Image 1: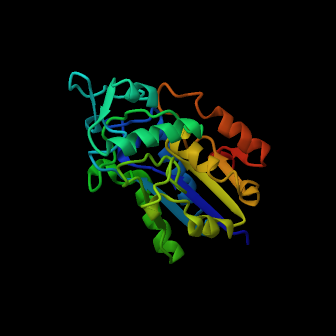
Image 2: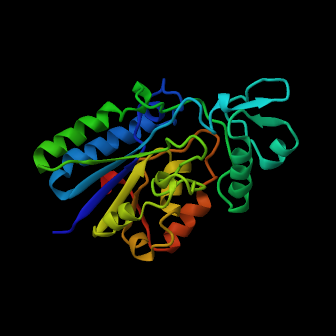
Length: 259
């Protein structure tokens, strides 16, 4: 019997519910389809793994980490660049030199631009919880399979964004949790097929896949559940190059209803 892993990226209330802090349009339907997949394929799923985005209020990608020259905070979805900080347009309120260096490296390494998000997935909050429709099926799977599903927490370092589950956008050498998670990569490599889904298609799912580009054998096992993920509004095309490269490397796109 094939060893199948289901890896779900950030299926949390703040992304998946219409009143969530950073609602991804369509995410509630993605999660309903994903829950149905888990329910119908309980015996075929060897392991369920769920990442959870977890932040402090004061986070480099949240509003109150920054001020403009008049003391105002940036509006949600504002893009902050290294050049704008150098010019004094935006001022980091914490770890100023570290924040500037972060932006510089982010741009030099071709990572996604630095965007200010609404405060979301705050540690311990209702918004950070795995959304009920999926959590209920994860619990049912655990009862039937006789094993634990795995939760992978990411994002608590307030000085670097962590879209992908395998490392921060720019790892912090002083914080092991931001470095490439080789044990996690080794763990998923043991499976024959790795199904991946979650929120958002444009950001955390895409970057999780991008972080596997250095592992050709894993990429050939990757099956992307295209009807179980959606884009952050206004970012429909940002991740297209990642998905195009994933296809070239052997990843497949399927609908959950076709499995």
